[in-house]
Image 1 (cartoon, rainbow, N blue to C red):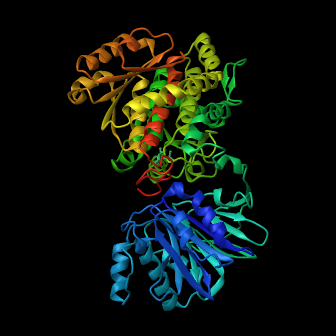
Image 2 (image 1 turned 90 degrees about the vertical axis):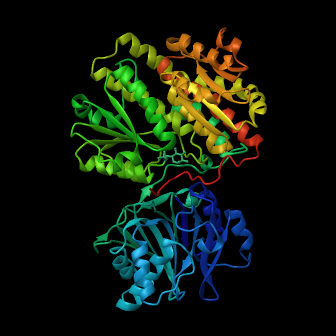
Image 3 (image 1 turned 180 degrees about the vertical axis):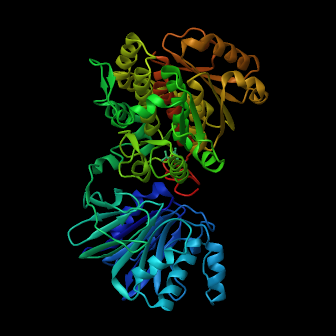
Length: 612
Ligand code: G6P
């Protein structure tokens, strides 16, 4: 969480940093702040609220060729002005911005208090900058040596930028567990949590590794490790385009991303289905084919919507390839001392590739000897660099905090893995393989059709239910995790309490909630359990519940008893999540808009959760 930016060069870095922070607001938007040189001294402006509020605070005449900034998702200390970053050290010799958590801050703070240090905020970050200041004055080392020494005493995940009153030409940065990338310009450097703030200026990037510290001045960059080894920087050429991270005429990023799904599926599947040879071309899979052949189970880990894509994958992989799959919240998996066998394959689903719990779960699985496989959307991300092998979803940058196109891209990769696995395990007939791959190759057309057809219908339905206090989402089989994802979308962006349930399980609890005020959204598109879900729909109507049904075109049973229904094109059972999630995303979207919610930046949430 939290976004950090830095600039050092010839230009005025203040507008560059402000613009950069706006691009990083998906990482947190509790407060924002800048540090730059004013009258030859470090100057900090910071404020609770969004980057736009900070912008108002800054004197338009200020100019500085060295700047750092921060947009916060609060961990230690409430989201108030004094806890906003940057933070000064006690004697204002140094300033810091920080993304991450210093776990042992309490004991470090205690030690500093005994040495006479006083604190202005409630944050762990201020402890770190005071520790750096103390060690700096005590050991008389250079600032980068001091930071290197200090970090050996620190436990936790962080990326930091530090500026000093004594050296207006240098920024020192360090990374351990939270992302940090340097943009390389002509006699200028940009620093950020991801490349979006500097994409406009340069596509040359250096990704810092964990345990690395860089000293950056206008003409010079040197990298050393915490254990004092010199590293030569590796410059990568970014392929991302600026248009990909702009709204492109849509009112919000989320809406743009919902509508981008057909394209993101085409991009994700491109070149990966070879029907002539009946093969699936996934480099990560093919490089670890022996592991897949010998494996007795797959464990999927993830958080949030990525975890839910993992649940969908469980149905698809077990159904098609007949290999047992377990799906775990990464945060639970890592702390419950899981049994991991050497021939297990642990697959992480992560859009950002930075989620702290998912990253740690993978580290654990790797230590225990399992093959770790990443399904990520961000090239160069921590997870994509940690895994043995993996497959990228090519959904393009996802900026709306509530995940949409990453989910469908992850599901489409799961289908590919299931097909590839079914092939090597001889569990799929030629006919079925062809039928599913044919359908998959054209699924984007049905997604497009769903998007166009549902547009007005769903808005009307959303209008009817926008004041609901609760909502229930039901599905069976592969539609059950889709129901969970539908409920999550509604909760996240409209703040209506919603629960997803397996339709049959409703009888064991949620049915007690059903009355004339309670909408239930039921996914009833699949023939294989249609009669059962029809019975569940009737149970809801018998209790005067309001029923919104997602049905296949031409449905004449459930649509007749539903208060409202949304027709979607028919497709293969395993591919149905790619279609069925679309009306659910749009339903939440319109309800949230009608309730006046900020859908791109829902309260308390952040897109990239880099703390545990
Ligand atoms: C946050 C985001 C979700 C996302 C989850 C996992 O909670 O708000 O949209 O699904 O993190 O993120 P990841 O990047 O690992 O997919």
